[in-house]
Every structure is written in C-alpha cells, then in structure tokens.
Length: 536
Image (cartoon, rainbow, N blue to C red; front, side):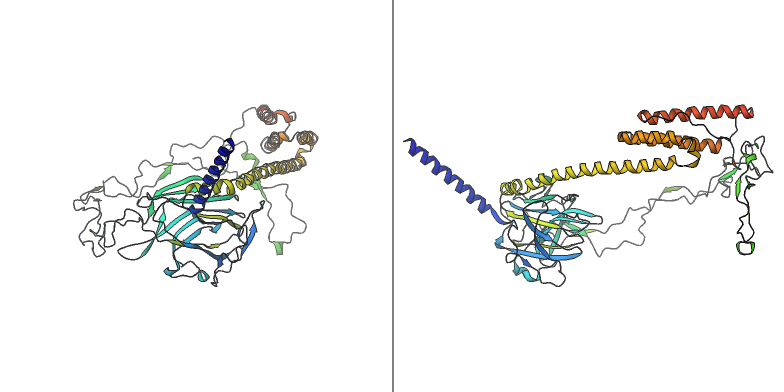
C-alpha cells in the first residue's frame, strides 16, 4: 500500500512538472541566448549602407555568448523571423532582452525593432530603417538624447496612415558598462510597464494623451487651417498713455554718476610723484644695440615714496551716484480699451478623430536590430518574447542576475584599487611640489626645516594635506613679509606634521603681529594704506 502511494505521488509530481514546463514553453514565443552561432538563424541585411560586422562573441568576464557590434561608426542590421506572427491585441505580451555597453555609449542606439509581417512591404535581406515595425524599444543616446525608447506605430482608421507614438518622459540609459536587462510589458488593460533590471522605471497607458506624443486618440477638434486673424484685431493688453507728458524736471541727459564734491584730497597725497619710476638698479644690457633694438629704457618699479603716502599722481574726486539721474522718459502704460485677447483660429471637428477602447496593434512577425552607432562593443543577448511576466522574471533571475552581480563586484574592486592608486599618485605630486618649494632661493635659511617636515610627511602619507597646507602657508607668509615688510622676514618654528594646518595659521597670525609692531617702532606711526588715484 505504501509503495502504491509513493508511486502515485511521484506520478503526480511528474505530471505537474510537465504541465508547468508545457505552460512555460507555450508562454515563450521566442528566446535567443546566442550561445550558438547566429548564422543560419538570423539574417544579416544586404543593404549597402549596413556595413557593420556582427560577431558571435563572449561577454567580457563570462562564458556566455552574445551578438556583438564589432566596429565603431557603422550601420548594423540583422533580423530573425518568428515561427508565426504574434498578435498584441489579446493578453499580456512581454518584450525583454539584455544588452551590455562594454565600451559605453556616447552616440548610438542599442534598441530592438519588432516588425510587421512581410506583407507590409519588406524582406529580411533588405531590412533597413524603412522596414515597417510595430514597436521599437531600447536605449538610444546621442547629444541631448538619452532615453530608453518605446515607440509604437498605429494605423489611423480614418486616414489610413501609420503614426509613430513616442512614450513621454522615458527612463534614461544606464551610464555604466554592466549588463542590463530591458523589459516592456504590454497588458490587456492598455497599461505599459518599462522595467530596467527588473525594476519598474515607467508606467503608462496607451490611450492617455499624458503618456504618448502624439496621443493615440486624436483631439476631437482642431484649429481651422483656413481661419485668418482680422486686420483690426488688437492683441496688446497695455498701451502707452497718449495723454501723458514728460515732467519738466525730467532730465534725460543727466549722467548716471557725478563727481563727489564733498570728497577731500587725503593729507600727504604726493601730487608730483609718479606711481612708477625707472628702476635705478637696472643697467643697459651689454649686447643692446640702439639701432636694432631701439632706445633702451629702464624697467619700471613702484615708486618707494608712494609706499607710505596715501597716494601719488594727480588726485581726482571719486564718482558717486547721481541723485538726479532718471534715464530716458517713457509714457506709462494703461489698459488697452481695444484689447481683444490673443487671437486663435476657431476650432472645427477633426476629420481624423476616432475612438478606441484599446489599441489596434499590428501583429509582430520578426525581431530585428537596426542601429547606427559610434561605439563598438555593444553586446546583445537573451532576447525573449513571452506571454507571461513570470517567464520573463525567471529568465532575469537565471540568466541576467548572476552576471550582473559578478560584474558589480568586479567593478567595486576595480574602483577601490583605482582610488588607492589615484591617492598614491596625488601624494607623489604633492611631495614633488613641496621639494620644489623647499629649493626656492629666499627659503634657503629654512630649507633643512622644511625638508624635515616633508620627510615626516612621507613616512605618514595620511598627513599629506596638512603638510601641504603648512608649507604653503609658511611660503606665503615669508613671501608677503619680503614684499610688504620692508625687511627680511623671520619664520616662526616649523610646524609639525601632526596639526600642520592649525600650527601654520597660528604662525601666520603671530608673524603678522610682530611685523606690524616692528614697523610701528621704525616709523613711529602705523603704516597707512596706499590708495589709487581715484577713491570710489
């Protein structure tokens, strides 16, 4: 009895498994893994414009194969027919495929086209951009364009013309070089879902004017193309007041700025001293030839007499805003009594208007790749057309996800290694710069101290930024003292690597105070700020 029950259970499990496999196979309309060479199953276009060479190639870092775009700056076209046309009018239809942009995507497409039956006027050997399709789906990027397209062509039952309807605000193309899976789910309730890597990025309704441009269902009315705006139609909401008169005190010629009459020339201003004088220490070069080089003139230097004076040269009053300035007078605006609003042509019934409860999609009989791209290395794989979302999900989990996870881990490791390498390179450049600073002649007296700080910093690379800040602050402090201090500057004790930035800031403040006190002692008065010729 127990053996019979066990046997019955095994038969039941086998039956259920067979039913599930059969159901899955029934739901799968097309599946192309490219694990086998594509020749004989896919047809490459013979059109002369399409010179790009397709290759059967492994995905970098994997044993899995794909269909490879092998050359940059080429047009590519290849197509595979379905066993029989698939209707999109009944039930759910899922379009899914993987693509890996191994060299990135700067300008080009990586989308698929789902074509109408050949009776629509095309054949596989002449597949090109004019071949009639029902749906175009996938990445496209170039310049300002960066989107995952979803475009469907639909026949207007009134005009008989096929119109392209573009999904509004589609998702962007992933910017990395990993394998991504793109999924479009068409549902019988007119809903469209766009997934990237199994995550919903866009939901739309085929009948909604908010989701597609142009909308599938045309507007009931349209502007009358024969309507014309009347000649006496006035669209100006405001007009200048014709009765307004410019005030008598309105001076259009008054300047925006005038001299400040209250300004007084600072005491001690040296009117007869130029701001620059000939360098008295400069000498004429021995090889200077007046006939060939012209008359030699000594280079100019700042006039030392102007260093302590408020200014040199001709003094002029600074400018200030003119309180009388009003600018050009214009008559004020008033409401236009003849204003009729912005003219628009009258609305008339749209002859191409129709109503639908659901899209009247054309069947798809083939899937193809017809692209132009400036990048090579685009790898297509695991192309699926199915009638069940779960089938698409199972393929994502079994074929895409393991690859993506492995690529993601490898990317993280490479980024970490690159970051470490970049930091080491940065530190080397910093220390090379610091050694150059230490060799500057006017720092000779402090060179051994600076080199000591640098050597400690090389032993402790984590202090690189602090060491750089310390030495640069010391350098700037010494330089400023030499330029503005009137004597050789003294450097405070060299900062230590462990609080480098803070020590340098304290040193600069301390040195500045000592210099100021020294100058006061020499001159008997604080040094006055030097002014330019014109005070604003």
